[in-house]
Every structure is written in structure tokens, then in C-alpha cells.
Image (cartoon, rainbow, N blue to C red; front, top):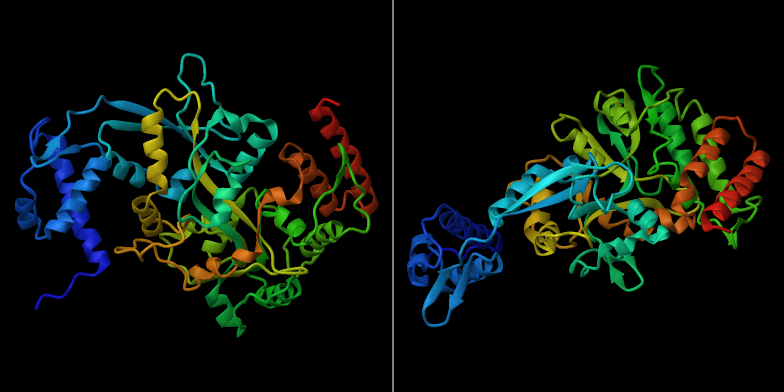
Amino acid sequence: MKAKPTNKQFQLELEIMAEQLREDIVSGVYPANSFLPPEPALAKRFRLSNKSVRKGMEKLVEDGLIEKIPRVGNRVIAQRTRETLILACTNSIERDFSLRALLNDFHRLHPWIRVEIVPYSDLPQFEGGVGSRPADVFALDTTQFQELKESGQHTKLEPLEGLDGAFPFLNEAFRSGHRQYVLPAIFSPIVLCYNRSHFKECGLPEPHGGWTWDDLARNAAELSGSGNRLGFCFHLLSENRWPLFLLQSGSRFEWDGTRLRDLRGTKLLEGMKLGKRIIHDPDIFPLYVSENNEEIMALFNEGKVSMILTSYMGLNEFRSASLDYDLSPVPYMNEPRTLVVAIGFGMNRLSVNKEAALQLIGYFGSERAQQLIRSYTTSIPALQQLEAPIEPTVPLPSRYPLYREIVASYRLHSELNMPWRLNRVLAGQLKAYWAGVLDEEELCDKLVDKLSALEREMSGM
């Protein structure tokens, strides 16, 4: 008796049939206005049930390749006019999504749509450059959307539907009012990444969710005791690292109109002091000035650092490395809190190809694409429920699923109540304080004076 196929096997067999028929249609085996073979014949060819074949036909209808003619059959639709979409994204998107693989898959599903990638750095340009048309789709992270929202430019994005089945906080992160402007695709908390071999070598138990920064300090001293490696290191100036200490204070910046309230005696100041204590403790933080996160990742990959702060997207740097590493929640100050970042896709209101743009955005949130992201990368897909990859190509650390257990600790940059346009000034003053150029009193005075003055200027008051 033949065993009943599992859901994974069923989905795979269904996709094989749909993929083959797509290729046959695109290559002209079944030309426009011709009919596909009867469903019983397809069931025999692909060794599927009639019900399964009907499901496959529904997928081809959704893809716009065929139409069902009642009591006649499935007719191939005339080839659609070729369209070119412009996708604007930052350089890290290729790594974070395995973007080329996803776009190749998208093209197989929608052969009439070609996607052209154009890079941008800080914020997207909605109007396009001289002699060039504007981008149709933008890849945006939560801080970029925050900045667009604060300046009112988020309305240059076309409203969308939220992603059904996503972690609820992801849709919320890309909303303004009751409107969704970006469809979430991946996300990550900042976590502690550690070299398991180093802990075994020193006879130390591995980190766990109850670690405080004092626990990290003691272990970092043990791990770096031999002097040939760093116990702990991270790129302090990264916008996805230093805000962690402020968020862990459990407080936020408060304003009286455009004037920042004094920070003296606040929990927020305690978070800033924690950051200074960590980087000035030679047993915790080395006298090493990093240029960027990638430099820290390279040192960790070479076994020269035992513990780092990173994101799940950053773990993609280790995809081809033979590294014995694992993950733990970041140490905490008053209560477990960590920074979370997310990336999604939005549509330019000025797009001349809105239907195709919507298909691309919808693809990134589809179960098919989310499954590929899970198979090809270490990034966390936005959908909460996905089948385990049929053919995983990326080795994952054993504690990879811990992100699901720490959702309650997630905090966005925006929860600090600091306008993103003031972020560089805030970071500059904290850098001076942490470097010892400013003392605590000077820091409090300068933050109030500089941030209040800039906020008044930006607000036109």
C-alpha cells in the first residue's frame, strides 16, 4: 500500500508540476490561446490526483498564465507585454535576502517582468534622477521608514495591505495611522553571538538568557586571559548597537514642545553610563577601534574574538565558514530588552508599473519566497509559521530559534522618542562622552542645548 505523501512532499510535487507547465507555456510548447492537456492527462503525467492538478491550475491562473474556461479546459493567455521594474535597495539587501536567487525565482513565475536593481544609501529618491524614471519598489528598514514618517514623506509610498501571518509587531512597525506603507519581509533582534570552542577551552558554561552585563564582564576577562584574542567586541558607533544601552534603561527621551528635558537623575542617563562603563573596562572592551560591523564579523570568523553583538542578518557572513558558534539573548541592565530591526518593501506612488510592482512586493511576502529566505540565508522570515526547509543550504546554530522566545524583549529605535533627524547629533555627543571628552554634566547640558536647538530649527520654530 502506497504511503500517503506528507504535506512537504505534496507541496514539492505540486510545485514541480506548476514549474514544468510554466516553462512549457513560456517556451511555446503551449502557445497563446491553446489549451493545456485535460486535467486527467496531467494527473497521469505528473502522478498526482485530479484534486492536486486542480490546485496547480489555480496557481497558474494566479500567475496570469492561463484562464479556466468552464466545461472546456484551461486556455493559455496571450503573452503579456514585457515590463521592467526598478528595485532600489541598499548594498546589504543582496546578502540579507540572497536577492539574486529570489529574483531568479520571481522571474520564473513572472517571465514578462524584468527587475533592475539600483543602489541607494540613506533615503530613497522618489522622483528619480535627470533622464531616469523613478524606482518602482524600495527596500526599507524600520529606521528609514521612521525618518520618512517623521518628515511626512511616507505618503509618497502607495498604501498596501499588511502581511497576513506575520509577527504582529512587524506590520505595526511599517504603519502610519491605520495605513500600511511597507510590507515586512525579514527581521532580527540584536543578539549575543559567541564562539563555543572558546568557552569549552576555558571550561566556562555557555551564555544564557539570564546574563547581566556583569556576567559578560567576568566571562570576557576569562576568555581573553591568554592575551591572544578579545573576550568581547562590537562596533560601538553602529546605529544598531549603541541605542541598545539606552533602550535597556527602560526609559525614553521626554520633550516639552521642542525642548528636551534634562537627563540628570533619569534611567536614560544610567543607560548611557552603562555604555561608558563597558567600553572603558579593559577586561570587557579592548582598545580596538573598528571601522564597521563587517570588520568585527571578520575578527570573530577568524577566532580572534569570543563574543560579539550582531543580528541574524549579520550571521549571513558565516554562511560558508566552518565556525562553531551559537547565540544567546543580549545581557541586560534592569530587565531583558533588545533592539529589533526589520526590512520590508514599499511601492513608489510615482511608479509607472504599479501592478507589476505589487506582484513583486507580494512575492517577497509569499510563503514561497519566505521559504527560500529561510533555506538560503540566516535572516528571519516575517511569516510566523513556515515548514522546515526541504533542502536547507545554510548551516544554522543550534540556538537559532531563540528569537521566538524573546519577542517580549523587542524594542524599536522609535521607542526612544528621539526624532531620527537628530540621531547623528545624539550619537556624536555620546561618542564624545564615551571617549572621555565630555563628563556627565557636560553631556547632559550639551544634549539639551544641541538637540533642542536643532529640533526648533527643523520644526521651523
